[in-house]
Length: 226
Image (cartoon, rainbow, N blue to C red):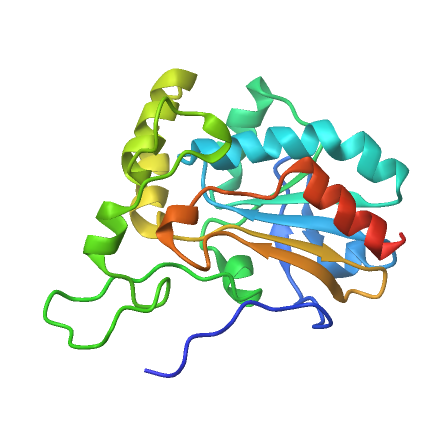
């Protein structure tokens, strides 16, 4: 197996993509967005309550970003029909794109945690060679959403219950196939070059679901000078 792909970084060209839109008809390509800066969020599926909250945060921040000349695009790891169904009842002004296979995440180099086999003799290297024991021992509580730091999978279940979110079969399928996909945010300039990035939990599973806040995004946009 070759070396894992590192996330794209500042100065790299954004890779081409063409994705179906959940918020409008047809598809959207990188070429359609070129010529103006945009913030691209690459999220897990609807099963992830932290991703759903981040989309809401970006929606709340969108007027300020648009005033600064920056559009906002959210790519959701779920089939377009399911994304349309969900956001029909929870409208958002964001441009929502669907990527049920996480191909865009992969193109931008956003890792998916891969667990080692029990008999592996290689030292763990999160997130590319993850130890099941390290993941099970992880405790998270981003933004104090939970009463106390909680194991990541239990945290998901607790927040989904709090939200009254009912998993549909396709949500379970996506979670089973892509549940360890990390989240990435990329600020892309007018020329299609990455100007800023934030990759979730590159250091440790204890940083899972810690996503950039409004102040971090605003600072990145200000530095861009859109």
